[in-house]
Length: 116
Image (cartoon, rainbow, N blue to C red):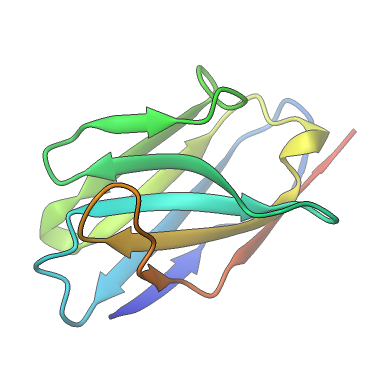
């Protein structure tokens, strides 16, 4: 399984960014797609996940600001990030796995920097 993430960058607080992650390879059993992030000096944390059936889950810190979606036909997961805050600054990683609670395959990470 290969994951190619894109869409990070530098944005001012209050701005928006959209991350994309395209999956390829043996992904038929990868029912869950998600985004995680690692801020400087912190552990990696869950941002959001979405199942093949469309069930979503968000970290409390991003609820109401971020939206995860997926295009099953394109094997791509998106993360629309609005009302960005400096504390959202992190490297964002996409992930695919067969079930909730596992994190089998990781993308390369894309940097998101929010300036105040």
